[in-house]
Image (cartoon, rainbow, N blue to C red):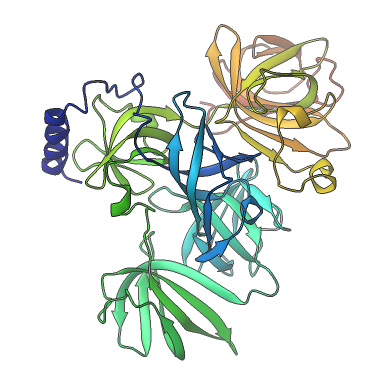
Length: 471
């Protein structure tokens, strides 16, 4: 979006009095009397949690992969969804009228495309680039981080960062599902073949079009320039198109105009060309912090002519990651709002808070023997459960959890990934706690390290310095 359009939108809103309560970095709140559109990933169940709101889904309609569904069982943690409904005045609860989900990509991982770099693996499917994170991507239905190998057929949901889909959820494609799906802009079409340009600029096709192809009635007779989803089948080694339909790459349409909106995604752009989140144009009343560009954020505001005028923006990730045993759990009455204390060894502990925005993922055997929804609540978390958490420091020794995952691990080591407070040849201070170590290289203050204490005794058994943070 160019500056001229940005100025016109801002001027129109200012005249209408809609910017009087705005603040680019916080403050203000959207009206709760209007319908609300929320786009983000599912952070938990017991109703559905999206963007910090617990949505009552008892009267919701479901649209999953272009098919109607009956209830929350069709959904999973990490799915990028659109919820249309209303948010109550507390800002934490609401009701959903409809929930939409469609994965971003289905197909086999391209040969020779897999690159593993520690906790991050990148690959392509039909040329579309994907990035998966061992800690933040949800893997389900048989998928795993170590199982991201060429030829593996998977379904991907996530946020596009300008070059790749940053996967929030990956699951194995069902053995009974032999169809693949990709999305892009049509660049060539003659009724017999079709070629599309993917969001990362790669070309997919030309693909032969089946004589029995299903073409959506809304598709123009000349679809060149139209953003579409195409469905492919492997016909004896030849990929053949069996379905073509127009698609909405940002999940926003005319029906969302003048809604309050909460959008989660990756912030892209600059002051000259404007900004987008999840492909949706956004405008800010205050200057944008350059450190937010390229990161996952949640923006809250009001939709006007397809543009979100932002009241509030929050970063949605943390720089501290810990794997540890739980020593205490406290809830304030809401199943996701409270605090958790974890064991940092040698009598030290760390307490962090959780709320409706915290992602709760259950990868443990407790889930498979329980409700099997891939999530849990504080009421289901027990002392001595092993968890992996992603935290931000709030100052004054307080911490907030962006995500918490319950795991099964027979060894249950303490693992801390955090910036170094201070260090010398025999000691290192992390999160204000002094540990001993015998590493041959002494990290510098500010370096991010990965420290493992297998015995929870305050002595670091393994110390690795993040090469991206060291000088």
